[in-house]
Image 1: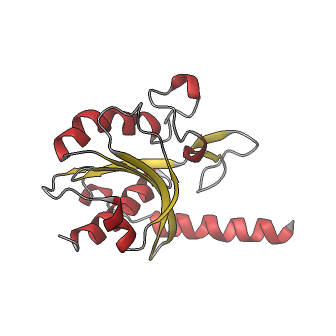
Image 2 (image 1 turned 180 degrees about the horizontal axis):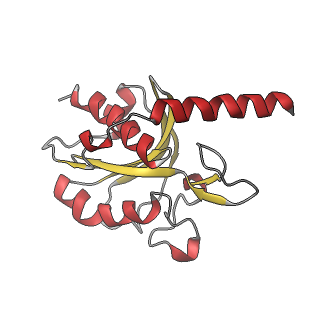
Amino acid sequence: MMKRILILSLTLLTLVSCSGNRDVSSYDVVTNSSRIFTFEELESIGFKKSKEYDVSGLEGATKAINGFWLTDIGGKEYELRFYPSHSMAVSLGESLAQEVTGKDGKIKKSDLTWKEGIKERRRIKGQLGTSSGGNSTGPKHGNYSIYGNVVMLCEGPEIISLEVCWKLINALRELE
């Protein structure tokens, strides 16, 4: 038990010290790219699929994947939603991304517009630097980003998750 407390304390201390001076204003939430990305291109840069979702209820989407990608700040979980174009990703995908991200992101099935993947979007509160404990749950993805035709839900508290999104965006930019 003491070992767990020590590990949790060190993890929390690292998160707080690393996130204290981040400038999230340098990260755009929506960035246009004329490139139409495929999941296979993400696999080529090391993205690993954990689960593929049924997108029949996700208007306009062609594919939705939950998975992880290793960055210099560790392995992070993402939910990626693919659309035929950037304009469709923004017009059809942004409001749904906003619905499930951030500290007030919806995690109850009855509150969601698109219910697929709800289990993967939850985390136990008390993780990732939050002060709540117990058995309550909260949203796993603190923020989202839209790059080209891909809506990305990114793991972590808001300030860290936007940076997590941009780690993946910068890797995608190298493909262009």
